[in-house]
Amino acid sequence: MSWSHYQEILKLDDPLEIRFYVRECENAHWSVRELKRQRDSMLFHRLALSKDKAGVLELANKGIELQKAEDILHDPYVLEFAGLPDMIQYKEGDLEESLMQNMSRFLLELGKGFAFFGRQYRISLGGRHMYVDLVFYNVILKCFVLIDLKRGEVKHEDVGQMNLYLNYFRHEVSGEDDNEPIGIVLGTAGDRLTMQYAMEGISNQLFVSRYQLYLPSREQLEGELSRLLQQGK
Image: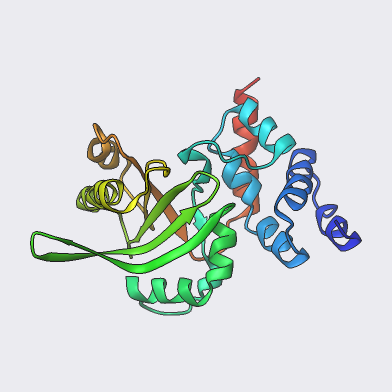
């Protein structure tokens, strides 16, 4: 790492956060610009809040380790680079187009091992055509990752649709050496109880997560992480 990397990291106070960004700079070879973006988007906190105390300490000491589908998830995904908050109204297609135009930034937000595979990937079944918004391949987990974008709240039928996509990819697209595909439905909100019932009994690796179009509040995420670590004592 360069001195400029250390200058940016040393602006932080939390030793856990400092260790995480040092480790990720070493592992992912982030540029200074990429480091600043990940720090400002509170990547450490967003990942840590999905773990228990032991998991937070491991994240700080080892960085991001992709071993299972859950390891790629963020909640929320931060898409501030899309530039959509300035629009009074935007459609799902506007968000998709912005992500395509800012693919290098979107890949940075997705994390390690992602390669872009296709947009509006067509699935033809029973004389009907359906389209997966964005398809990636993760070279570390060795599987396809399908992403569907929703303008607002994720609904139960969105989960069923993604489950169909995953079944199709498992049988028709994935190779013999590939692992089970992963599906992520991204929306601005989702009722937890509805999602719980919608996904109950689904054997595929299917997840619902949130995205937001602005940088998160450091004070809020620091407070949430502090409460998590206090509960772990």
